[in-house]
Image 1 (tube, each protein chain N blue to C red):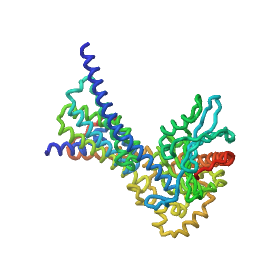
Image 2 (tube, rainbow over the protein chains, first blue to last red):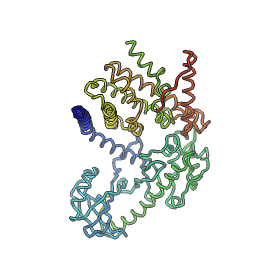
Image 3 (cartoon, one colour):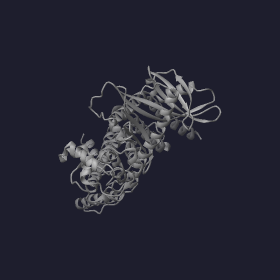
Image 4 (spheres, one colour):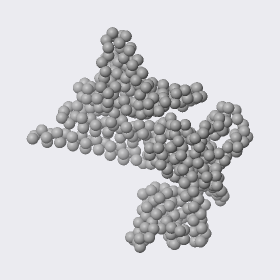
Length: 302
Length: 206
């Protein structure tokens, strides 16, 4: 009987010490980890907009986040809430019903830059909503603006991959033509499905217009060798292709479907469906949002 | 000093965790589709093995013998979690690559078996070198398997194209892992037979 207390005490002490160490390390590293995550996200967005590592970012390039919330009102109705940046560095919460009719605009008394933190943002949104309504964060889209001219959009999306979810980001120009695709997190098999992150696969989506995307499928055919070289900037350089030749090859294959990766058809299909559905949903939502902005005569920042 | 070096050598070849002890075979098959994967997981294992061996060696008198296994698991999990939290701060790019592997290490048979067989009996310095040796042995094994599979399966090494075509796609598929490990194990056994003249007895697989 005495021994059981000894054992219990020993194990409890081990667990308490371990959890104290973990708590200490977590508290010390939490802030830095969050900053790193934010920096990586910013870099992904910038490289999708064409400003990769080392490129000089123009000073008038601004990327505005637009946060979408799903709000359940006190009467039990579901409405959409967009946290929009408006001129003079102010922020509003624009509510609209599910068919896109604007219902309400509430100013949020918080700076836009402070809202990038999810907990702060959730609190700010809940604080301006009437009592009894609930809000759930859904998505962030990024609108890029250069000197008052709309440069494009960066839209995150999620799709079911081979084993778990593939998180991706698609950048679009104002006519909704894909300008870049990035995979932000994926757990596909190395050597097979993980090839979706390689530029020769991702760049197959670049240049596809919204009309092409609507009919886009995956074909189980080998990727033509010169197209593969044109899609990968490093390979194009090694093969000595001039930028004009690269452009010509890409134009020739622009209307092609997506060539499946060898041994990873499911991952290829998942990526294609993910990009297509992300863009389709975004185009639909942006259309409604633009209409609502016009009706409410909001002077948005972008 | 020479006994410490022998501990490292011991983990590297004569008691190699994968090819001689046949421990932690599951990750050895699962992640070794390229040298880079093998290297990353191997490095993570070296750290966890060394830290866990040292911790258990220092605190072995405090751990009640009847609850040693749960206590060891907590020690391993502690170091794995600490690495999982510190690495993204030090080097986010490396972390992105090893993120998946680091969390797997808690359940590796090799680490807990070294704690049980070695670190719980020996003082700090030999435990440190034993952990280092076992970690390096695991790293070496993973890199060797990864190199063979990547070269024959994709015609590449470290992601650089060498052949320009895939000689044997099956090598990067799961079945290829079993083939490669089987052949390397056979070579190790054959070498032992040649050197000692005795037919090697098989280790217990986990």
